[in-house]
Length: 81
Picture 1 (cartoon, rainbow, N blue to C red):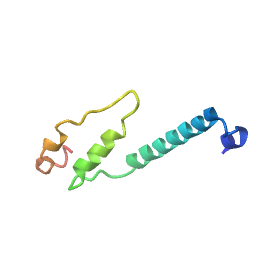
Picture 2: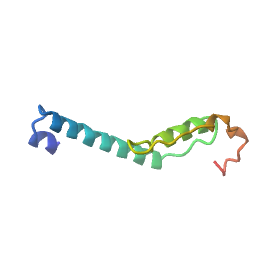
Picture 3: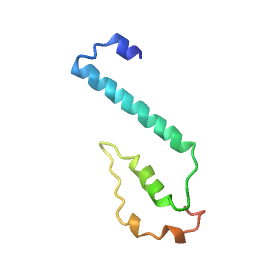
Picture 4: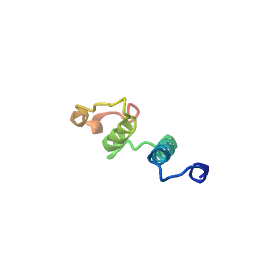
C-alpha cells in the first residue's frame, strides 16, 4: 500500500512496477498454498503434477512435459508418486 501512496500511478514505469510486485506476491502465495496442501495421488494426480510443473515456468525457464500423457499413472505405486 505504501508504494501506491508514495508513487504516481499515472506513469507507465510506476504502473509496471506495481503490477510486477503484485505478480510476485501472488506467485509467493500460490507457492505457500501448494507447500501446505496435500498431493492428490488418485484420479487428479496427472493434472496436479502438470499444474505444479507449470508453476516453475519463468521468462528464463520452460519445462517440457512431452510424454507425460503416455504414463499410466494408475499403475504407479502411490509411494512413488
